[in-house]
Length: 304
Image (cartoon, rainbow, N blue to C red; front, top):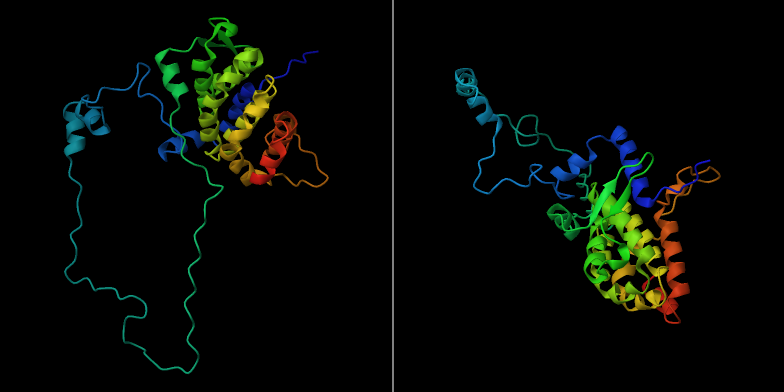
């Protein structure tokens, strides 16, 4: 029986296939609204700044006389009628005016705007995306039957963790493949085989982790929480090294700690995917408390 566990990054790829059936234009809308970064304009990179990009109008002109006739055909504009009567707004005229002794109705007060604490923030292009597009990362995708994997061109133990690990952590906030899959899968692989190389790099990982959490995107926050759990369990003293940075990491925990599903006595068949933010935050805080030393609990309670 096949019992190999599908990695977190591969599960996200599988979920994307299902989401394309329910909301096929979700990523396209996010790109048009600026929520996620756009990709390159061509397989060979972006067009030069002095290059005139083809437009539908120029494409019609290239068709010759037929296209030019379509473009130059004037539309018949309807001239405004000089005898058009001006429409009065309600309550501005004098017809039918009368007095009344009934109390005047007060205008309803405007609804206060939403604070937007849980709204998604704009995700900017990561350093991982730029490095991968330039070909600076020693990785490539191995397409398997059930789940993709990463094929490393060099041994992971020989990598410079001070250089590569912050780049992979910076790509956690990506929402488009192959950047998301490679960054999350590569981060898990490096944490599994990093050993003593991880602890000196912890201060450089705080800003990428904070940036990913501050996107307030449930999908990105869930992936970041799983990486944080793996980071603390990857070696000794890493949990204690994170204690001084709780003020940068825990505010988002405090925001989503009550985001748990109340399904009553029914069964959540998607719990294997571990996407419930409330449960993930509880698990992460427990790991922080156990592996953070004697000062971890008081610092956690100070922020949450």
